[in-house]
Image (tube, rainbow, N blue to C red):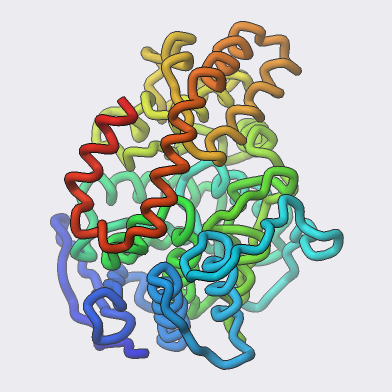
Length: 401
């Protein structure tokens, strides 16, 4: 694996960045990594080489190709898990564990270290909860890493403004925030196509290793709790496999449900004022979140149930209503899990009107869920359809509508 020499470039605000290509010579097997010059002391060439191995393994796994590493490497095991879970390779799929065997996953208690502990920080619910918890428990320095997705390795002004606001908020909690711009999400078509549910965890680990000069442990925030595990790109069985001899990757927070995380954020020192969860990406207007998509509305419902509407200023609450909730339609199992959790919270809190609206959403989503299973099957099996991605996406939107 190659780590090519860094080149200096400037963003629209005049900040100097160091831009590096990490990976092989093949155009779809390397990614761009750009780091502000003031964060260059976090760059780790050994970590970049490990990140390049992770990315190459992901690319080969989603293409159904073999990938050979030393028996000591967990990356090969990660590839086997992904191939088995999502059927990338033409072999029988073993049953998926819905729970983790006793003793395999334990609540993670940070231990003191000479180096910093690192947290992959997106600004979403899971990462913000992990930050809140680690601040209460961590015995050493904490470093947060935010990943900005950019085609050319340079961020847009509104992305920079958001991450600068994060940096100020985290500085108040004595947490250093660094950010990196990368095209790792989009540089390989198959990795991009399967990002939402299969490849995001490995890609984030690859970037984290590249910035691990002062870190010996990265925390990757859980998406699901232990009672609701599904095949997913970040998982208690998967994330530790991306560890290297020098830096470990820890899947954190699976002992908490999403609503429990919301409560922890609302009542914690960080608060919910900077949450960024939008399914359409960071917005450039008055609010960080569009406040209309499913991810936004699910989070707004949880914040509403937690009594935190006033402090949650990154959302536009003017359009939040039961009618907006009832208009939602669910597709994947992941979405159903979170809505079922919201129903349990609404019942416990006596919010019968929200309970009824969410029951309506579940009943009306049956066709969307069946269509989605067909869509995912075709995306997995018909790799040649990738070149027709644009017209197929338009057709998909029309069918779901």
